[in-house]
Amino acid sequence: MRILFVCLGNICRSPTAEGVLRHQLEAEGLAAQVHVASAGTGDWHVGKAPDGRTRRAALARGYDLSRQRAQQVQVAHFGEYDLILAMDKHNLGHLQAMRPHTASGELDLFLRRYGAALDEVPDPYYGGAEGFEQVLDLIEAACRELVVEIKGRL
Ligand code: 4NP
Image (cartoon, rainbow, N blue to C red):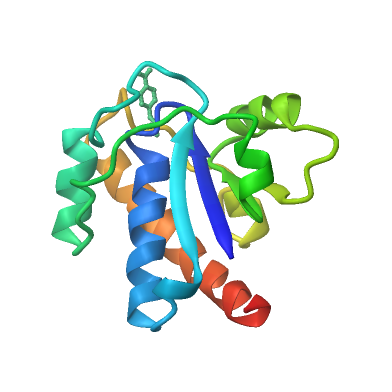
């Protein structure tokens, strides 16, 4: 199974989701059966490691994001991933507009699908430290639900 997380810059929210899901899958012994990646709708940060604030907040909870590098989402990704999960409605709209009609994989809003109190992961880029903690809280909880779904699909 192949899963792609998408946000705007691919340096804060979607790299966090990639790292958290990979970590949870490793803990469940499922890492070899699921390919996890992330991408941004924008191209400003392509090739860069995740934002330093994102990396530090994630590392404090045991997630090492330092080897990730930002990429921009491509039309070809729709043929390569079974599930593409957008962090906010703006990201989702962007993805819906570029999705080929022939694409067989699913496209959804990450938190709406996994029953969180919020339906979007707020963009932490221009805010304070608490925003990065909120991103982690929301993503950790939603990834636990996603792992349950993955187990049912494998
Ligand atoms: P992300 O956060 O979409 O969670 O990676 C952002 C990163 C960079 C920018 C905006 C949001 N930016 O405007 O450069």
